[in-house]
Amino acid sequence: MVMKLISIAAFSLLAGAVSAQTAIGTGDAKVTSKNYNLRKALSAKGMQRKATDMDGVVRLILQQTSLKKLTGAENEPRIIEIDRFNLEIRATAKAHAEITGLLQTLEGVADLAIDIRVELIEIDPAEFEKTVKPLLVQTTGRTDSPLFNLRTATDVDAATTSQHAADRILKAGKLLQKSTERYTNGIATTFSKRHLLSTYKLHEAEKQQVSETHVMKEGYQLVGIAECSTDRRVVRLKLTEQAAELVHMKERKIEGLGAAGVLGMQQLGPEIAEYGSTGSLDVDDGGAVMFRLAYTTSSKIWVVILRPIIFIQAEENARKGLAP
Image 1 (cartoon, rainbow, N blue to C red):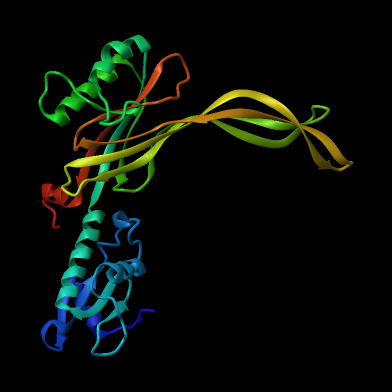
Image 2 (tube, rainbow, N blue to C red):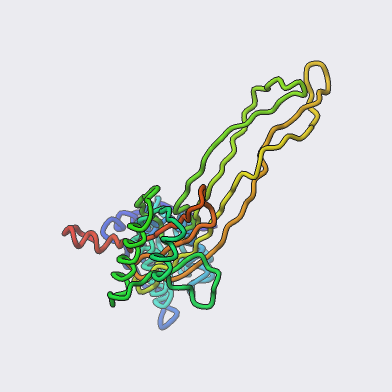
């Protein structure tokens, strides 16, 4: 277990993320103490799957840097946790460089999000064939993917042309719902959902209603991950449709325990068909893609348009003239 100590050195952490202390030893084996402030890496935006607390950061340091062994001895490599966000680490220059790089990566993740405008559109099949199909770019290597890049014949910039194509699809159909949300980079989430809720009840054999009410959901949800590329120019989308459709309501006999003993019961409940499909592709920052849903409530076609824009907090601060 990492020792938890409170030291006068903790006050120096307020001056910055990293500060140097006394060096011990010589050559490559020389160890130096430095103080690291983890506040930004563990900010609300940075609560990622890799490290969600101080213990998670320590685990990453021990896994991904040359600092592998901690003895707690005064003149040996060690880590001291101080207050909520600070680590005092004694290590070699090589390990400190690795730790600094690791924390910068975590801070960069915390600094990054993806804003996505999502539109659910209903389109007549004839209009889909005429207007939408010519705009679709099939995913390389797959002929059955429901996820498509978009293009027009007149534009040359990839992001602009896909936005123009998305606008044409929107005009060709009826907008059912839309939203714009900020999504955490690389974390599974729901991008679009439309569920119709209905209720049903249990009945006794004599058809007298029992108070218990059940809820049935019919519709779809589009779940997946949006992940920014390392150069922050492309968003990788991995999307899965999860659809549920009512086939019919049916009754089945069950036995229940009542005041008079065992009673014959009939449960009226839904038979649900569950289905869906999956697709993944890269879309340029500021571009647009289309997911064709298998689910619909009519003879028309439902599609979802997604328009991702990479959000970088440091760039936003610079635009507003704020300090980083």
